[in-house]
Image (tube, rainbow, N blue to C red):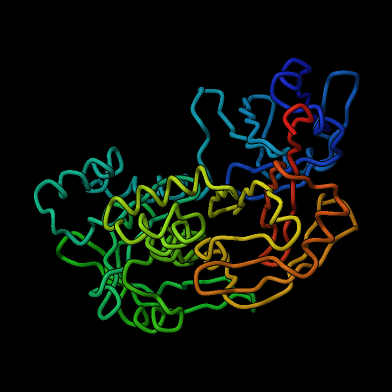
Length: 386
C-alpha cells in the first residue's frame, strides 16, 4: 500500500483549516517510534504518501490487519495495529516472552493478571517496597519508581510480576542508558531475584544514582528496550514543579505566606492551568510542551518548567534549534538559560516570534525531536477573539 486515505469527513471534523495545507505529518508507530510521513490532498481527501509504504513494511502490516488512526492535534497521528482476530497486535518482544513463558507453568497465573497480584500484596503489606511502583507490560514495557533514602543508599526493588513478564528470572547484568545534551551514557548494574517477591538492582546502582544526581522524591522511568537494556528517564520531584508554578503567578504576598502543604499544591496546579502563560507538557516518548503566548513572551523570553527541561536532558545553558516543519531547511537558534526554578528561551526567541507572525493568544507546541532540536507547531488564535 503506497498511500493511505484520510477521509474528507474526518479531515473536516478534526483537522483545523490552517493545518490542511501541511505537507508533512508526524506519525507515532505501535512501538512509540516517530515517523515523518508526507501528506497529499485531493479535493477534500488527504493521504499519507511518502514514507507510508516503508512504515507498513517495517511493522509487517498487511491487508488482513486493521488500523486505528487517532489524530492527536498539530498534525500528529497515533497508529495502532489490530490482527484479523480483532485484538490489538502485540510487539515481537512480547510474543517472544509468551513463548518463553510457555515452558514455565509457574508464571502462567502471573501473566493473566500481573496488576492484581501487586494489588493483593499492597493490601497485605502497605509498607511493601513496591508501593511507589507503577508499571505497564506490553509494547513497550516500562516501570516507574519513586526514589527514597533506602533506594539511594542501598538498592532499587522492582516488582517481581514485572520482571517475570519481561524475562528476568535469574541474576544478570542490566545496562542503564541516560540521554543528555552531551550524548548517551551507560551504566552496568547487577540484578538479583529476591525471596521477598521482588527483584533488586544492587552493584552499580548506587554509582548510577550519584552520577545522575538523583535525590529523594525524584522518579525514574525505566523503558525496556531489551530484557537487559533499559533507557532511564529521570523526572525531578513534584515539589519542584509546584514551586515553579507558585512563583510564576502568585496572587499576593499574603496568599504566599499563608499557603502550605496540600493547599499550596492545589493552588499551584490551578495557576498552571489558569495563569497568564499556560503550560502543559508530557515527557515522552516523544516529549512535547505546549505554551500559550502572551505579550511578555513575545517581547522578552519564553518560560519553561525546570522539571520538563531536566527530564529531556537540558541541565545547563545551550543553543536550541527551532523549526516549524521537519521537512523545512529553515531554522532559528535560541539560547536556553537554566535558572534555579525555571528555564528561559532568550536570544533568538524574539526573532522566531517575529518571523513566524506569532501573536498574543497563539499556542506553540514544541515537539522534542532531539534534545536540542525542537519542531514548533503554531495554533493560531481565531481573529474574532483577538
